[in-house]
Length: 248
Length: 248
Image 1: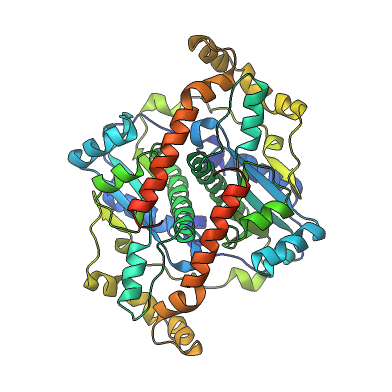
Image 2: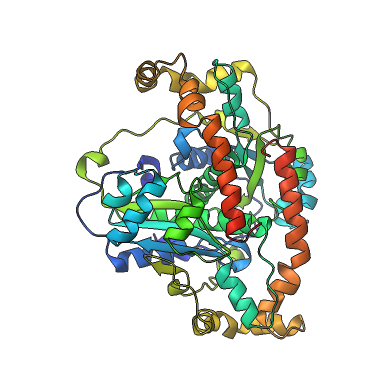
């Protein structure tokens, strides 16, 4: 519990390898977590070579940790293996559809997150690369994913450098901002003010608003970080990737 | 690590409440996990009343744990709260699209799985209800979810009854069945045989094949549990739910 409470994302890694045996143990541990019908419709690609990490880097918008981390793990929804098994066993697979993708994607994320918890428990640091679903088709090509395999989340993994380990915890909304009793109770304008107050008051937030010449923190999200143009073009790209990999 | 390695799904719960304060602590702990851009585009609905659990039960195909668990947690992708905040802060939100849903859904699953790890660490038992994305529209109605909120995973949570706690670990594929070094190496027929051998040899598997009058274990999946008709109709239903909740 303490590990979970004090964790933080680590983007800077020490020049130290993540031992293959340790990585295997962590993934085997993570595989104990729940999955749909015990189909285990996921795969993990562990990329360590410079060539593959260099190929992945631009697909993750050249975030430094793709090449500086000793290992990059791409967690994929994978109905390829399961379908091959069915076909070899006189069974007719039919997993080229949205629902199968969604189930496999959920299971891939459950696996990834359990891996993160296990990795942090032994002193490793991780960072999720949110770019994975923006460029899923390119990543599929770089990792040579066959049909019915699609990347969902990517982690950079390594031992933290010392100063990364002492970064302050990032802020989170108060629990009542996300928890609903029994049924959803929609937010009033007063609720919204209350929920976001602490975050908006942070010195860091004020600094970014000023730096970006914006009026409000929200505008940094809507105008810059997660803007309409990107959200829409990445949506088209993701549907395209689903189709290319045979899930649509 | 030991908790992670020896965990198992718990479907039978003792007649003992999960204290609200404990549930809050576990969710607050889970909120420390990673999320996209710190937007925290998720919500958790904690259903405890008989009325709401009874309404949810048929939507989860009357799996007993929906009504027998003291609390049912529905983890939702939620861009409603974030969009309301943007609109109140002179910012124009544009999160009614596939990519925003995918990012929020991934974050909701990361939150749910971290909650599971924390809950199991304090002696609770959990079960994922894979039915959530089959009936997402119905669940949205039962929980009164507004637009831009869609359920992704559901957990039943409670203290295990004694005999549930001693159930054997369920089998998993060998790690080499899901792990790829550097890039994906597609499976040969021999790989498939090797990967599924242990599972097919289980007494439990042979029993189910015989019970269902099938030739192979794979046929239980393709013909019964995850068959074409269901996969396709649930796909249509899920796309319909995405549209109904404003993500398409």
